[in-house]
Image 1 (cartoon, helix red, strand yellow):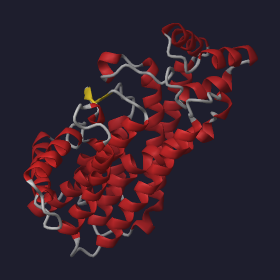
Image 2 (cartoon, helix red, strand yellow):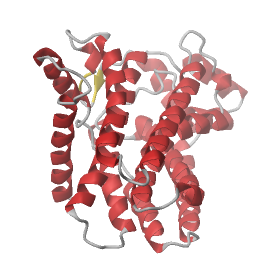
Image 3 (tube, helix red, strand yellow):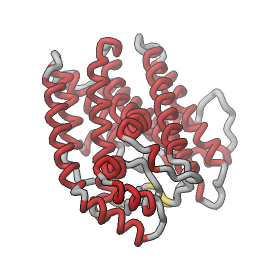
Image 4 (cartoon, helix red, strand yellow):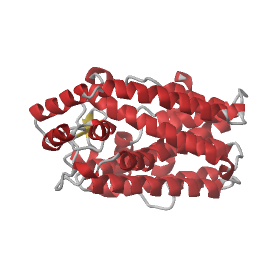
Length: 342
């Protein structure tokens, strides 16, 4: 994998260089330096899971055939388009959430010379995607499908972000708005489409497949993305900070987390009142009280049961798929996230 990751990172340098010399715009030295610094700061810094899984998935769909250099380059380019999309979402997300750090460094907009220029940088990141697709995929029979896929997934993600923002309005902390269906909708649209479905859909298109014939694959991946986010919500509270790499703040931030939704479902009236009084308060005593209630309600056991049921259900769906290659892709995704600790 490390060799693939090295090749993947080499493709980033090629794409960046092409974008910095895009004939559609006359760059000055200053503007070229700005974009390069902005890209290096925001695009390649994460775990790169989404991007790398395009290559992984494409490889599995080719059923073990050695990939040509061109196939490695193109699947990497699509992987980077997803990483560009992620960077665009995160740059703007951090501004909306007034966040301070991201991936262990200050958020881009927090840098002294950046500020609100970051809004335009987000727009630029989003516009780099069709530039990459045009340069490398314009002659491909699936070019229009690729454009359509990225546009649709972006729309779904932005709409998921909207539900999240209007449900968790800071000014009016109303826990009664939180329910499992709302949590599920936020997660499905805000995370699952672009993190789980998009990488596999890119690999399927590259393999010459028609996405219309793979709606069951989409359904399984959305289900998997939902399970992934529930794990995330769980780890935010119960994961070890030194393992997950961050200190969870979902309770203080009044997040519509799976844990609080489950707690509301399992609480008696007195416990509900207690949650309403303490959830979303940026004060260590209130946070500790909420965690104590989570323990009283045995949410760790509730999660363990949810995790094993989800796994069994997903395996059953996957094994019902007629194609062994597609099964391998889906099982590889599930294997990466099942019982993860971070």
